[in-house]
Length: 390
Image (cartoon, rainbow, N blue to C red; front, side, top):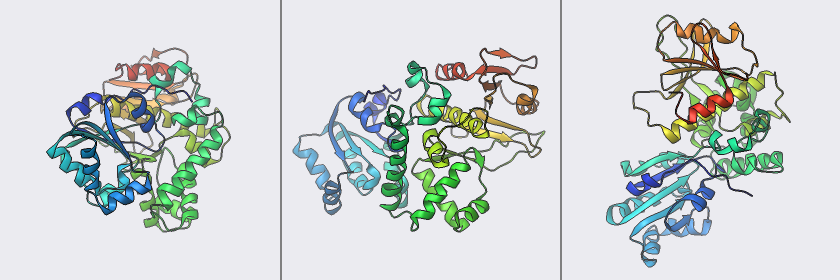
């Protein structure tokens, strides 16, 4: 299988200090380390159960193995660090007593947080790897239909049988992340929950309705959503609440992390153009690209919400607000109408942002008389990743 070069570059950060690298399963962390990471001197894979057992019984073995190899400086990789949180004490000690820098990868920070681990108290940075993004796939000239079908996990995007591979991916998540870690007691109910959660993609969640659909308590539903966030299978998009003229919703919206996985959970062979789901998938795709752009390229200020949405109590809505500077609405239309611009026009009355953009499926970029930009989705993604949107 061919390797797609990734835009993630943390070599400079690793030259300064150790780093955590989190990302959902199969986003390509392992292949990226193999293909693109400079100067790895030693690597521990904590999917190796025998190694994990040995280190659990004797954590000092970790430092002893490195000492045996004569490693007192350079880069050491530890894969799947969430499998053995207690190892971070040994990592901490080695950071303090040697010139070793660590790259610590994982698909979840849940066990680290549950065991009171403080992620090395600032002695390591934190990065995230996302599924494939536009600069990595633009050379394939992908269509929306193909992106919606395969999703953007590298192994599935490149697969000649994506449906089978997505099924295997979901089963692996259920069996190794959920059942093996003992995160839920009722796996069949959790499987049903995943399907219902996919139905709520890009929506404000109603926990009461979901608990009725799944047949479990509201508290169980809330805890299961937290599992999705902790394992990086989903994320929340907060509401923007600083408008004055129109009072806004305060509840977050829910998104799952990959379009192929969502399609599988919904049970669709294809997402049909013109359908409600097609619009939701398009919105989700643009959300994923902006979220990855923020993670890879920006360093948001602590008091700044990098990506959020706006919905007024009176029914106006704008899909995204990027870095509290640019308002962005998504529509799959090939010819926009005044109805497509209602939310942007209402938000523009507040005078809060520098740009108002409709991302759509039209052929040419243009601007309306009242200053709203109409931008084809491919052009929007080009401009986003070239730093021309902000």
